[in-house]
Image (cartoon, rainbow, N blue to C red):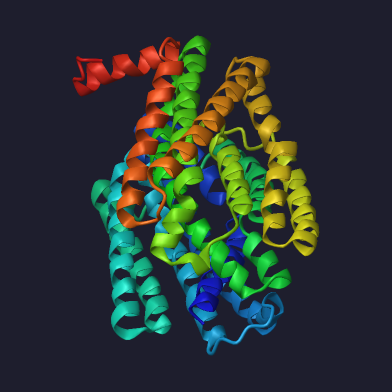
Amino acid sequence: MPLEYLGINGLFTNLLAMLSLAELGVGPAIVYSLYKPLAEKNTAVVNALMRLFQKAYIGIGIFIIVVGMCVLPWLDWFIKGYAVADIHWFYIVFLLNTGVGYFYSYKRNLLIADQKHYINSIYQSGGQIALAVLQIMALLFYSSYWLYTILMLLVTISENVTVAKKADAVYPFLRDKAVKKLDVEIKNTIIKNTKAMIVHKIGGMAVFSTSNLILSKFVGLAAVGLYSNYYLVISAVNSFSGQFFASITAGIGNLIVLESSQKKADIFKVIEFIVAWQAMIVSCGFYVLLNPLIEVWLGKQFLFDSVIVSCLIVNFYLMYMRKAVLVFRDASGLYWNDRYKPLAEAVINLFASVYLTIHYGVIGVIWGGIISTLLTCFWVEPYVLFRNSIEIKLKDYFKDYFKYAVVTLLTSIVSKWLNSKLFSEVTVINFILGVILCLIISNAVWILVFRKREEMAYLRNVARDKFGMKFL
């Protein structure tokens, strides 16, 4: 039964992520519109945008709750052979957690747009840590999935209210009742970007929020439970790295507005180099230690076959390597320019994942994601960015991309071979030693292979000048 509860967690997370499509890209569109007035310290325009944000997000939260309740009678259709008591009540708690999250969360976007993402991160990380501790205690001492879900709702409300109060303290003008009307030009920009983001949201939903639904429908809740464990680990890495990229988006927005074409291209190459370095470290670690981590954490009965795990890592690498392009696209406001890409991605992913899952099981849903990425995002996103914002040749980008990928692949294979020779048994101590081994090998190889690149020289200079590492 615990495996079915894991499946419920993954299923409801994906199902409600689909309902979050109601946000329709309003958030990113308004955040992009905040960059200029924040730089100019135009508090009147910022306040007007935030009032629009408030109205939109409260409406979205209410819409999600209402529509989510309408889905309740058809909930059983998504689940193959379930036997979990109170599953509909659990769904209602998850639904309220998603909808209520919109009522105050719009204010955190102002902190992010104003390059104060660190404030949001402190509250967000504190909330997640508190939630994890409380949920672990709930499961250990009370074995209650009910308490587990209720805590999730309470922490979400508490975190959002706390962040909203902090934003009010940082920006006192938010309390002003007299709010000016937005200029027509700003409204038109928001409307245009929102239309484009609707399509991006659909594509993102089809790729990231349907895997558990497909597995639940065609394989069963147990498969969703196993998949959710691996996805939890991968999502944790993406969430951690997402904090870094979210924090630099506003700064890159200023770079794009103020700096020369050459400067923008140089900084993009540095960010891409950092992304590839991070992707190598994590992918190498996953390839060597992801199954041992699951075994140490949960036991052998929760393991996937090594072929499935390898496909998960390939999909992770392809997704992670998009981060540099996406952060520059967001900072450039290029949502409209690649608005058809998400539709193609969504259609390919949905049909490929359903077909392959029916015929091949769990690995099919992973193949569907890989295929849709390679046929769309892999080449469309950099093409749009380099044509409209950053002056870099597409062939030069892919030349570097494949260099990074080959180094990552070879390093991962060597690291796994060496780890298997040194640590034959799966234990906590051997896992920790394996982490250290992977970190040493991956970083040493990267520095050795790319030590003469301009991006490495730039990072050395930053480390020397800003962090006092004179020994580099």
